[in-house]
Image (tube, rainbow, N blue to C red; front, side):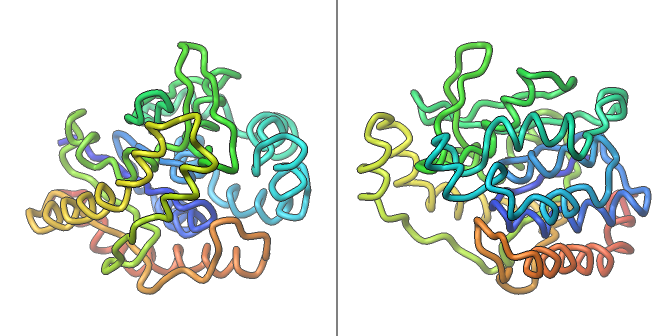
Length: 283
C-alpha cells in the first residue's frame, strides 16, 4: 500500500495547506509520495525538506517586498510573483530551503504544469534542487495572464498546473499510490463556475489551447471533485478541506489574513489527526 498526499493549489489559499502539512510534520505523519499543483507544489515542497513553519515565515517576511509579489513586479518583469527573487534568491539566500534534506528524503515529490501549446498537463518528479528543477516548480504556480509562460530545459513552455489538472488524484493513483490524502483549499460543497472567457481570449490569444482549457476548466474541476468524493466513499481517499470559504484573496498581502488562514489549516489538521492516523494505518 503506497500512501500519497495530493495538494490542490489556490494561490494564497495555499496557506491553509501550509498549516495542514506543518501539523502533519510535527506529528510524524509521512507518505510515500506527494503531488502538488501551483501553491500546492511551491508550498508543499517544504514537506519533503522537513521545514514546518517556513511557508508562513517567508510570506510574512516578504509580503510587502515589491520584489516578491505585486503590481510593481508585474509591470517591471511581466510576472506578478517575481521569478528570480521568489524562486531563486529567496530559497537559496534569504530563507534557506533545506536542499540536503529534500534530496535525501525518500518521499517522491511530483508536480503538475500545463503545456501552453497543447493545453494538457505535464507531470514532473523533482528529486533534486537546481536551477532547472526550480523553474519547473515556478512553472507549476505560474498563473495565466499575470505570469509569462516558463521555458524549461526539455523544451516545454509551461503555465500553472491547475489549468489542466487541478486535483491530480487520478493521476497519482495511476502511479501506484492507492491510499491518498487530498488537501483542498475550498469547502467540500464548493463548485467552480465558468470563467469569463473574453478575458482569456483577450490576454492569452497567443495560446489558444490555454484559452480552450480555461473555458472548460470548471467542467474539469467539478468532475474531479465528484471523483474525489466517490473515492472517499470507497475508503481509499481521505479529504481535508476548510469548513467554510477561506477569508483570503488569491493574491493577498495582509499578514493578519495570512496568519488566520494558516491557523485554519492547523486547526483542521489537528481535529482530524486521529482519523488521519487511522486512515494511513489502513483501519
